[in-house]
Length: 119
Image (cartoon, rainbow, N blue to C red; front, top):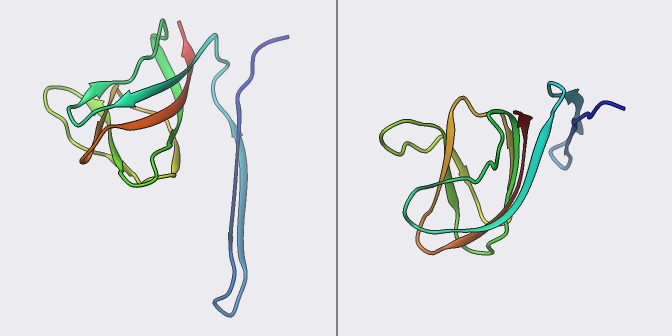
């Protein structure tokens, strides 16, 4: 059986005089590799460990800190430029367009992430 990676998104808004719902499910390209990490990210930019993955199809990441946010640069070249601010306790799912670097704002944070891709 071939590997598959499906992503489901469910969003609900209630309490503003109406109820809004959004649901979507989609798949990435057929992955051949995946890696799971639970890493400390400091206040200096550092690359996420993607192991032997050469083409990243998807990153699923959670900031486990209760206070500090972490910034993500999804296309790092020569200097850090945040594309995503991941607040304390929040998660994100994205397909990067290059090297992913992370940087905590004021103190180290622990991030938990899965990287899915091909070799």
